[in-house]
Amino acid sequence: MKLLLGDEAVGQAAIDSGIASVNGYPGTPSTEIFEYIEAAAKKDPGLRIHAEWAANEKVAYEQALGASYVGQRSLVTMKHVGLNVAADPFVNSALVGAKGGIVLCVADDPSMHSSQNEQDSRYYAQFAKLPCFEPATQQDCYDFTRLAFELSERLSLPVVVRMVTRLAHSRAPVSISDPAMRNPLSPAEDRNHWALLPALSRKLYDELLMKQALLEKESEGDVNPLVMNPAFPSSATCGKVGVIVSGIAYNYFREVFPKDAPSHLKVGLYPAPLQKVKALLEACDTVCILEEGYPFLEQTLQGQLQGHFAPQFKGRLTGHLPMSGELSPDLVARSFASLGLCDPLPAIDEADDVKAALRPRPPKLCPGCPHVDTYRMIKALRESVQPLPVFGDIGCYTLGFYPPHQGIDACLCMGASISMAKGASDAGQRPVLAVIGDSTFGHSGLTGLLTAARENTPMTVMILDNSTTAMTGAQKSLETGDPLMQSILGLGVDPEHVKIVCPLPQHHEANVEILKAEVAYEGLSVVISRRACVKLRK
Image (cartoon, rainbow, N blue to C red):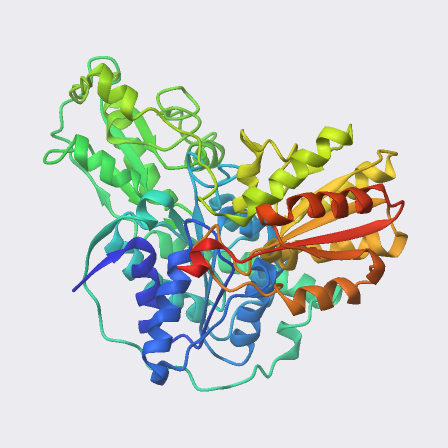
């Protein structure tokens, strides 16, 4: 028995499944999965687990496919928006399948605690026609990850495990089972299963379609338990009420109904078990759907059941639960209270002074952060150069959007700053500034700079090199120091217009003059603002 975060339970399960490698790129709330395995591999070299961060999520997933090709098991970790980056190999991997087990653990972030959007990764699994586990507890995290590796090899398919923030970052006791033996090295012999030429892809896609019946059979098993309780009181307005609940929402459901609960289906594996859903519908007049994220089950089941049943679903689409943000016990209780099945949870009457003390505050850069001095440079530059659009990127420095810095005007996704700045320059805007961190540059900024270098686009790129991937806990950066400079020059940027400045108050005036000169240059220039993150100093 171990006390583990949900993320750590996934990591422990991967270790106990005999993985040869863990692959990923840092991204909250998934980061701790990789770090847990990385720490275990360093502590016990006998595990022989390769654990090094990849440049981005696409690279990480492709590395896992390489391990699978030679018969080894591999875990891939990323947050939900990282799956956008890995979507190309992920979707195609459904066709090539898996020799050694591949499990992708993707962590979604409802309520956007540290993300640009709330996207729901279950749609990716459905789109790729791959099975997806959704744990409700830390024990599920462990058990489902073990099952996912077994299912991956049994059906020769990659398997998804979908996490959410609350589960990833909360702790509970977890029972650990005996570790599995590591697979022997055995490179794939059937070349026709690993080369997606059109003639082969058509056959592989037909095979994938035939496997869907096997996935549906799996979902009708014990992993998706159906509990019938015909004695539970009916609602005066809705009759017999049943519940379809998935993932962490199951905890909220049981908090509202700790002892006697309505008939319910707990979904832990997708595709959803349609026969069990039909059995629940036959016994109930109304079905409430509780799920964290988008109304995935609600939409999917309405489409699948059209013409067979006319269920009166209650969920996000009907307004019984909000369309955005995380669920909570209170929201679930209010939903059932509106159906006359329970009383709302007691309201918490907070004193006005407590509310004031807990009022949300915008995040800010750490005291002593090098980005503070960099944004002072940009602010001074903008006082004399107007207009100067500044395209930002994903990292600690994104906080430069807020006062008092107000140093960036746009931020979309990893690596977009350079490409958006180039687009603005191509459209005639002069001058243009892009701000990107060293790790994000290695993740997806290289290609944008390569494109700009080939045209010598009139724009300036500021790379904030703080020697680490700071926002997610100071993980290793692949593009810092000398390697960063080598990459910039190798992409074809004129060495005369690649400058390094040290963001410290005593260098402020000189740094501003350097930046001003490069912004005025009618070609591509790069300014590296280099000083280590204060957390690294500690």
